[in-house]
Image (tube, rainbow, N blue to C red; front, side, top):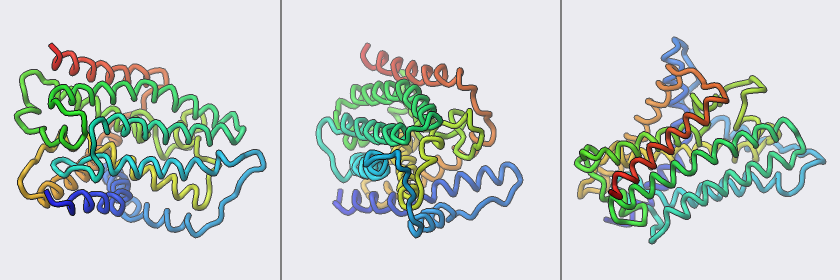
Amino acid sequence: MTVAAPILHVLTALVASPLLLGVIRRVKAWMSGRKGAPLLQSYYDIVRLLNKGAVYSRTTTWVFRAGPMVGLAAVLVALTLVPLGGVPALMRFQGDLVLFAALLGLLRFFYVLAALDTGSAFEGMGASREIQFSALAEPALLLGLAAMARTTHELSLSPMYDEISFDLVIAPSGAVMLVAVAFLIVFLTENSRLPIDDPNTHLELTMIHEVMVLDHSGPDLAFVEYTSALKLWVLGALLVGIAVPVRTDLWYLDLLAGVAGMFALAVVTGILESTMARLRLSRVPQFLVAAVVFSGLALVLVLR
């Protein structure tokens, strides 16, 4: 496959990832009978924030300022490691799936540090919830990747996803389908979507991710918003690569199918958020444990 395909995938993600948020918002607005914000509202918000100044509390240190920049750098590197269906990643090597998971952990680690650096008990509450839920989401992701590695006998994400086909997805063992369900739960959790978290909530006692970035402003908040859009694309690519296993000899058809799958996932996310209520905080760990069970069962099925 030509080297242009991975580069074009990265460029497409950099440009189109905020549009996924717009699609989700429009679907939710349509489902509730509202007109909703423009599709390009995320772009307007990012540009507006970049043109503003940042305000920093005297309590914060360099850790607070580094959080958004390190988070954006981590997700950018993760983007170069993840394939989109039949289109390989820009960087690929044996064991890159471990680095991929570590980069997502690094992003979360610095966001939590930045929230704690404010000295606010409110942001500390959100940080503790983020850590609690990630402690359950990460095993589901790692076990799912392990099951996929065992199924395809590959330790790199690109060749691993290149081996996925419709026959493998609908195999009698059902291992790949279980991984897909687990990745969907991880996708919703890591991106703070319903039924785990509501990105539009203003209820103080129910906020998780949003409360962690309350003190960010200006360019820092723009970095946070753009990082969220890229993270949506990166984790969505893992799920789309399984749900849309289009593998042809023409890279542009594979890329087109992958991009179409990403926007279809955004539509599905909007529908799910419009038809599901937010879970009580005490129920969220049970929901995430289900993802761990799905991934663990998939790994058991491919090891037997």
